[in-house]
Image (tube, rainbow, N blue to C red):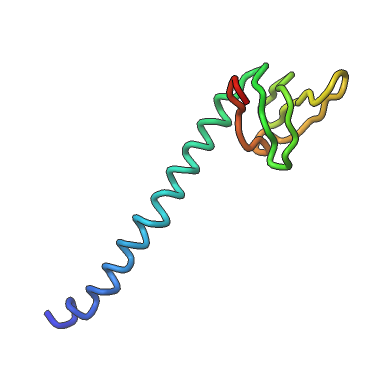
Amino acid sequence: MESLVSFLPIILLFVIFYFLLIRPQQAQQKKRKEMLSALQKGDRVVSIGGIHGMIKEIKEETIVLRIADNVNIRLARTGIERVLGENE
């Protein structure tokens, strides 16, 4: 019984650590994965490097991003940080 009581603070610390750090990070990763899989041609996006553009073409692992008239760049799908809304 005493050994269980001595491990209780460690167990409690792990539970707190799980709910404050691990679980929110897993939720954030899931949300990002869903966002990347929902990308569509014509979406306005911002890359991780801060480049704004419109998706011109989507392949399995790469995206062609139109950043200006007749200026297209190819980047990894994972290089997209967020999708811009209508008013952004």
